[in-house]
Image (cartoon, rainbow, N blue to C red; front, side, top):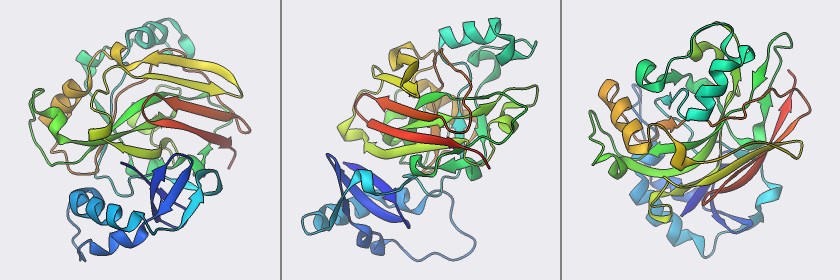
Length: 285
């Protein structure tokens, strides 16, 4: 299954170039009151909602995907966990490019672990990226995004994939500088997720996926997830050693070499094998 969120928080099923509006499936979600439970309500009850989406699909109204505004398919993650320098060639470029490292030493992922991004930075491809710090270099970083579907703490690598609801692609935008990663990567619109989630049963092996990012038609990043230093099970184990993972939590797995600046007016085109493709516009304030 491929599901998305679009326009004014509509729920959609993706079939080829078409989206089926199955928003009414969300009516089966329980009413909640303050204090809200941890995690994304949709993902916490995904099995039941999925059944209802499939029931409604045959008679659901359809629209071309190109005619809708794609939002982040995950609305309310508890956490966005990100993996720094998780491709060897990106580590190499970060250590040699002063525009990336600003004269500081770049540690390996084994040395520095994972970090958190603000959930307020989350948007979908249709919302675009705001790049309004004109005095600073703002880079694109395309990566595989893992969506957690089952709560877990101190999850073993052997059990890790059983906690995955699905996969999508993420852009981990960043301002280069000397501040902490969580600051430089948490600006509004700096986590782009989408265009939809592909459920784990349709993408059983995320460990060997080709992907590519173009900016204004020029290839900037091109790699395969087989080159991850910490693969998906390892990242889930490392993250859950520190944090309880809840349904809807997002793990950004890291970016390969080729990171480079973008400016307002640029058009980024992201493609991931087994997931799909999407375009993200860079705009000013």
